[in-house]
Image (tube, rainbow, N blue to C red):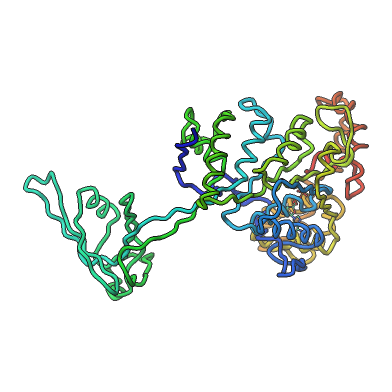
Length: 482
Ligand SMILES: Nc1ncnc2c1ncn2[C@@H]1O[C@H](COP(=O)(O)OP(=O)(O)O)[C@@H](O)[C@H]1O
Ligand SMILES: [Mg+2]
C-alpha cells in the first residue's frame, strides 16, 4: 500500500521552524565553544553559563554523530538565566539540514487537534529524512539561441547551441523550452543547467569569457567559469524533508497547501504507518537517511499528565528526536494531577532525562550581556549607564535590565543625546515597573483590582512551590517574568 508516497514539494525542513526576527535572542550566533567544547568567556554572543553551554555542546556532538535519538534533556533554572538562549544557540550550531523545532508547551492545547496529535506532529517535524536522488543535467555555456516562428506565429521551433571547454552540441528546442528560455531571459554567454527529466532551466551565471561586455548587465550579475568535460552530467542532489512534511503532502484531505496554511488537521495513523514503512524501505535501498533532529519544548511545566505519558512512550519509538525541555519551576504541581514533583514533571519521565542546570549571572556577566544587547539594538550606553543597568539586572532580573535598553534610548533621543546616560535609565526605571514593584503595587491596590480571589487562593501555594528555583530574593518573579 505504501507505493505512492510523494515527496513534492521539495522544501527543506527549515521552512517550518519559526524565525526570530529582531527577537530577544538575535545576538546569539552559537554556543561559543572551542574545538574541545570548552566554553569561551565571550563568543558568538554568549557570556558565562559555561557548564550548561558545555553540556549543550556535548549533546550537539552526540546528535551530529547520530548517537542520541530518543533521549531527553531538561534545562532547569531560574528565569532569564539563558535556557531559551542556549536552545537558540544549539539550533545555530546544528547546521541547516538538521531539523530543530521549537514549541512552547501551551501551544499543545489547541481546539482543532488533540494534545497527542500536536505532540506527534512536533515529533515528526523534528525528524528529517535526507533523500538522495540522481538527476541528469545538461550544463554548458550558451553559444547561440535560434528561434524560428511559423508564418502565423502560432508554432515555434528552435535550436540551442551549448558548449563546454571541451565540446559543443546543438539541441533542438520545442515551444515549451523556448518559452522557458525567454522567461529566464537566457542570452548567449550565460551558463545554464537543464534538468533532463523535468526540462527545467536554471541560470548559473555569466561566463567569465563574457566579463568584458559588463555594461550590458546589472550589478548583481554573477560570473562563473565555462564548464569543462561532457555537456551531460549526472548529479546527486540531496534534500532533507521532515517526516511531518511527507505526512502532510500525502494526506489526501489537505494536500501540500496545508503546509503553507499551517492548518494540517489530524493526520491518520494508517498514513503515518505507510510513510514509516516507505521510509524504512528507502533506507534499506540506501536512498534515504534518517536525520534525528531536536525538539525544544519551552515552559514544559505547562504540559499535563497525559502529555507527559505520551512523551514517555514516544521517546521509546524508533523514530524519536532528541527532546530538550526547559522549565523555571521548582517543586510544583503536575498539571492534571494533585501531585507535586520537581519542575512539574512526573518522576518516571524525570528519571530518563539528563538535567542541565542554569545559574543566575554575576554582575560582570550581566554587564557583558547588557553590552552585547545594546550593540545589537544599536544603542550607545555611557559606561556609567552600563554599570547601572548591570547593577539593576542583578537586583531585579536580567530581562528587566535588557528591557530597559530600548525605552532609555528613546528618552535619550528626546533629549537629543546620542548616548544613553544614567538619567535616562532612571527615567525609564520610573516609568516601567519591575516585578517587585509591580507586586508591591498590586498589594497596595488590594481590593481595587479584578481577579484577586483566584490569586488569593493560588498565591501562597504557588509562591512556596517556586521558591526553590528562584535566583533572586523575590519569590513571585518566577511566575511573571519568564
Ligand atoms: N549566557 C548568555 N549570553 C548572552 N545572552 C544571554 C545569556 N543568557 C541569557 N541571555 C539573554 O538574556 C535574555 C533572557 O534569557 P532567556 O534565555 O530568555 O532566559 P530563560 O532562562 O528564562 O529562557 C535573552 O535576551 C537572552 O538572549
Ligand atoms: Mg525561556
